[in-house]
Image (tube, rainbow, N blue to C red; front, side):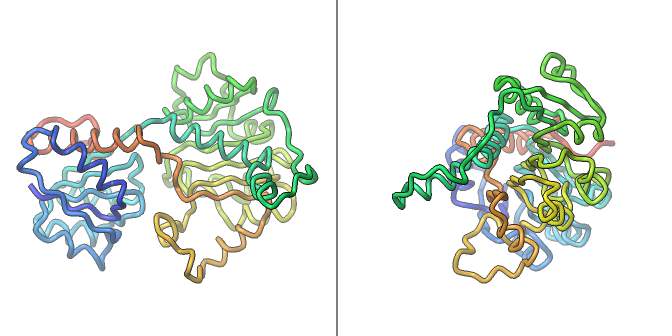
Length: 334
């Protein structure tokens, strides 16, 4: 069986290659790595493959799915949790097997969330640069204590719960919002409707999936509800925030600071070296001019433990497909 990887990076190859020998019938599995993202212009690379393995920025719309089906591909392995890039109706109509990795080291993203918060709060990125130049002045580095602050967690899945546990450990008051709150949140914080959470939180951290109901959930209508000077953190999906509206809120000082590990138009930027290129995304470039904005390139998941888990679960999903077994990680429901 041939599996074509799209958007693959050296670390994907390392961890999938390392895990392959321990898989059932490993000799019958061939991994083909493509660095290009899957889209209409590159789908031809899937010719001859039985399955494709894709990540968050690959395109799985109806035309791409139809092309994959025409090339004989019957299984789509998502090496990520989200599937907002997949046309579910088309995938079901064409009879694809589609499975994801629903959770891989939730603590990795939760810990990265804390790292972003404390970097912005205590200005450690600026302090690092200063000290290397022999500047030990403290002007401009004043932060605040996390203990006693109110942190609002929007989305109480595994990552949201892990984030809540971390901030509770710092002595923060934790508010949580989720249409289907997990019982595990009991004892970690207090449930709140979104307007209350936004109004009372010093830090708002987003951990929900991207759907029609959550797209631009933080935008022109909701930003004014936030406590003046609050910090907004997004380590989930870029489309959860309206970047243009966030820029306006930063300019007006309504929003105190912003930390993002995801960006709505990240597919042309992240997971590649653009340091020698002219970046023509004016919105992103404007965002980068603010001293109170911190951006990382979708690295929240990027730990050894998470990458091992991604490979292991993806291979498990593949085995379910090959054996015709029910897969608990299937995206498509009857």
